[in-house]
Amino acid sequence: MRLARSLTAAFVALTVLTAVPPPALATEPPEAEAEAEAAPVLTLAQALNLAENRNAGVQLAALQMATARSALTVAPASAPALAPLAAAFLQTQYGISIPQEAITPQAVGEQARLTYEQAAAQYHSARQQVRRAALQAYVEWQKAVATVEAQQAALERTRTQLANVEAAVAVGSAAAYDLLQVQAAVSGQEAALAGAQAAEEAARSALGQVIGTPIAGGVRPEPVTLRSDEVSLPTDLEALIEQALAQRPDVRSAALDLESRRLQTGLATDGAAAQQVQSAASQYQLAVAQARAEVTQAYLAAHGALQELKAREKALEPAQEALRLAELRYEAGIGTWVEVQAASAAALEAEAGRIQAAAGLLLRLLELHQAVGGI
Image 1 (tube, one colour):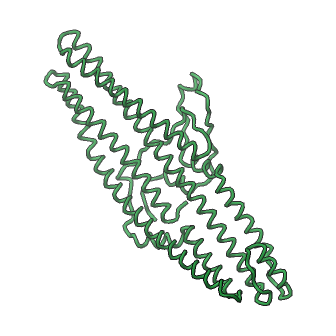
Image 2: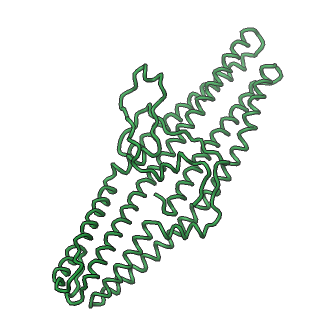
Image 3: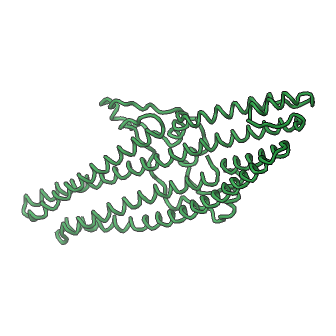
């Protein structure tokens, strides 16, 4: 599946596993000399690795897969005289009660294979669930950090304007009313920055809970640099659905369960096994329907998010140019501070919208990748 031409930061992390050691997540503030250096970065790949390695559900699924693999290697596979041993093996390993005369070594080996493959599918499903939660929390953190940076830039720009207005008032070239307005704007942006910083702290804490370790305040995520011209979305929805049905772990698990039930029906002598086959077939059809729905929803959401980012990017450039011109007009004495303030608010809103749209598109791309069975 070709989702993008240049999404290295996002999709390397989706395919490379545990190759990057976890970063040092210090809980103490950095020393003064360390603050002069670049802030440490927690990459998406590292966050995913931490989430997997510290999740009890994934570890349990891995243990169950290893147990099933061991059972596969010791499954009775020859000599009809082993029927009593095979019956005991099936009862112990899988809880299946089958008459000894109906058992063949091939059936025992096949059941062991199916059980191992089911355990492997469940392990991959557990990994996918944990990674999905980590991906969502990480993107929310990225978005929160980018919002803080935009608010900080806007505040610094307004503080510079405040200094200019104070100087203009001192020489009588600006009214005191302008100074009051700039001071009010600075106060408002300081409050907005405090709110953005609180949201960033909450997002960082939420990611720390998902990955199982707190993230120090000095640690940063990878920046949100995604642009619409870097993204090329697939256009064949049915091909994506077929890919999902072939590789999604939940669909694979349901198919294996159905195959196992059919095998048991061929061995058992009572009617209960046939009912179990019917139930497994229903579960498989349900898994297929759910996969189709999730892929379709993720596909449409990704296309919608891409269009939104394009619109946000298109709106940002004129907003920034309007702010530049408003500042020039004010400095030349032919504009008012009200114009500058309005243009500044519009530019900040446009930048915030672009950040939200870029983060939203990144999340939709990752969701689409997972909907088709990517880990």
